[in-house]
Image (cartoon, rainbow, N blue to C red; front, side, top):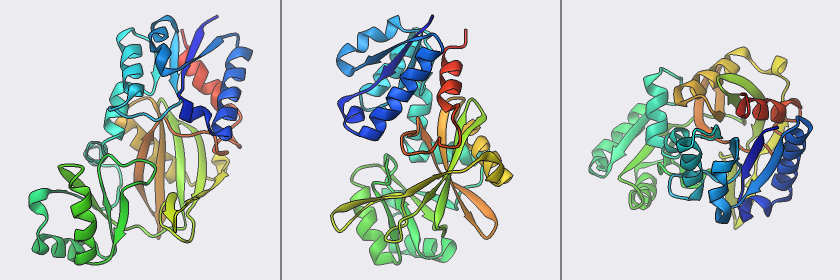
Length: 290
């Protein structure tokens, strides 16, 4: 019998869907003959006593989840997600740099520093990349600080706000689509796939509209119904980051596919795994393979 630690916080447990997903994970682990312990930040020292760690709280180098990942790594304990993946995926400049270096298909992407924010430079971006453009603050998550701009004046209103939070901003070609593919990859292999249907009132999978949060629809899709090139692109993107657990967001447009995002430690509580009943079995077997 091995001991699986699941690192959680109060926010993780405040959502009934997340809680049910955690219970499913625990039940699968126990059915496989392992013991499971939920570890809260206050009990972080318990990490060194488990055989593997599954982080189910928001990962960020600036919060306690990164400390948990580092503790596990330093003790030689398998962990999802690992510290390196957290560092890369939490910084869009770092993430896109890895994808571009490995020739993974992404929207045309430019990194701008404060000194690049001139009217002439921005006007050339619209000429080169078209309109609208997508502007991202590099530490964004859950679609926050991602905005679509249609002209130079609108660009500067957004960019001046974002540049206060970071030394750089990301500017990308806008890819039109009604849905994103989400390809879940573990250790370089397909784990699950689903469609995120974009709400008609936004271009993001999650957005605040008139003071209300709107979310994408989620449809789990069997592997045989996912275009093979989409699966391969998801695997290529994940491999450009590491060998952990990743959720790769992909858009299709006129037959071409582009990676929009690679998420470390992606969500699994909204039905992403409906057509993939062995997701937790695969995850736990991967973590506790000894």
